[in-house]
Image (cartoon, one colour):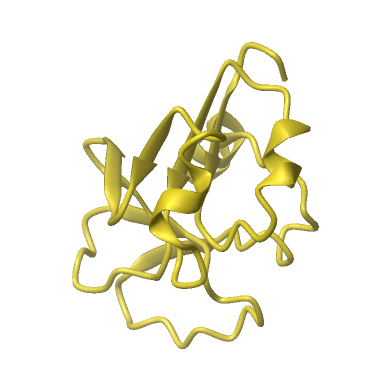
Length: 116
């Protein structure tokens, strides 16, 4: 949506796709298939590693382990086959896994809160 912030968890592909996304702000966490300088004209912010967006919410391209006290929302696992370790909380939002559709972070948080 026009007033939302769009966060891409890496592996963008063709930068032209980003122009079509209507968002107030666009953020990229670089993936292993992303070249560093290619996307600077398409995103407002670009990060080369994981990013905490709240005290207990970590966004990353690849899954991050050993942080059982937080939720790790990530991409990278295009086959949705990552063998998660016991006690780690992960949500895989690789573009093809979520149907190339942006997911509302507020809905994720609400769903998790209801199930804990």
